[in-house]
Length: 241
Ligand SMILES: C[S@@+](CC[C@H](N)C(=O)[O-])C[C@H]1O[C@@H](n2cnc3c(N)ncnc32)[C@H](O)[C@@H]1O
Picture 1 (cartoon, helix red, strand yellow):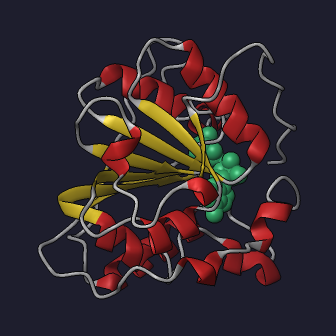
Picture 2: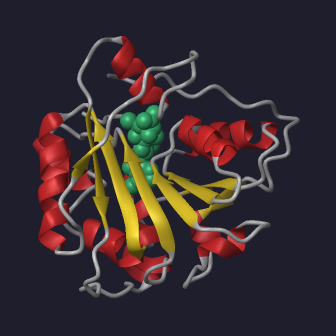
């Protein structure tokens, strides 16, 4: 489904607390240092308009939530949503999740990773842009603490199975567990905007949670220079195929 360009947030809103840039973050990044209060940190990859971050941070004030969003317009929109709410435990970082996970985050620093409705990049020549890749998932396993969970929800069955296979291939996760959606109690009672749109259209969603096992990670942080320039950042707003 094509996406409309994001609305511009109110220019009078101060986004300086909630909007970060992946390229401005230190390496290694201790994610808890981004928040005013201590607590386990969960990261959402591809936050879009930020519904998950807003709902999850309000529901779990004892935890901290960081989103990473490659499209600058959506990152700003998401920051504006977070800036308008009283909860202080959510931030959005504009930039590439590959750089954040592969170059910046230390081992075993996260309690959960959430990936909801990742772009499918249908065209064969664009497949390498899929965020849930064979290169990315070993780092998700590396940065998740023992017992932490990776949540994958998508409306693309083939991408779902491919991601689960790649995750299994890392040897770092237990068998996937099905996750169920609960009935929505109000108009924004969905995991994300894409989940809302898909469910209201009566289309199926594939959902799984994969728990990090006890095995040591099989990869190390990569040098930041490897992922300094990412062509996806120039094309993220268009042509998701
Ligand atoms: C289809 S949208 C889904 C947004 C949201 N998760 C939802 O379910 O409503 C996918 C989002 O992932 C973002 N994205 C794609 N590749 C990314 C990457 N490498 N790093 C961070 N965000 C990415 C896109 O810009 C887009 O906002």
